[in-house]
Amino acid sequence: MIKLHMNLFWKKSCILGIYAISDDENTLVKEDFSGKLNEVIVEIGNSREISIAGDFNSRTEKKN
Image (cartoon, rainbow, N blue to C red; front, side, top):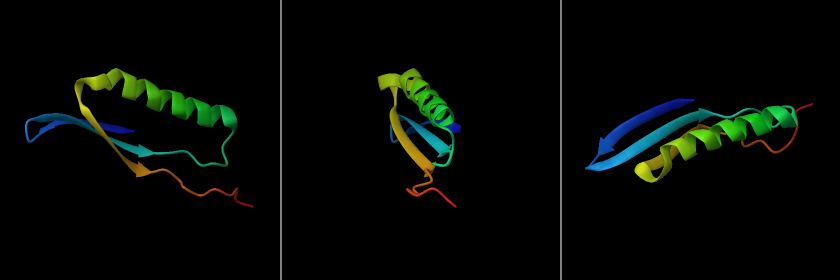
């Protein structure tokens, strides 16, 4: 995860660059990823506008 804090047009902003884990991963791994992402968002709080970008592995089927 990459976290970039900056001021854009006099607004405090934070861009999160995220490479999400595969849907094929174990449930505990996926929950750990979600928990860490939530911690980062809570840490930033309402102090900045948050933009999230990256690869979220939108595949919905398991690979064979």
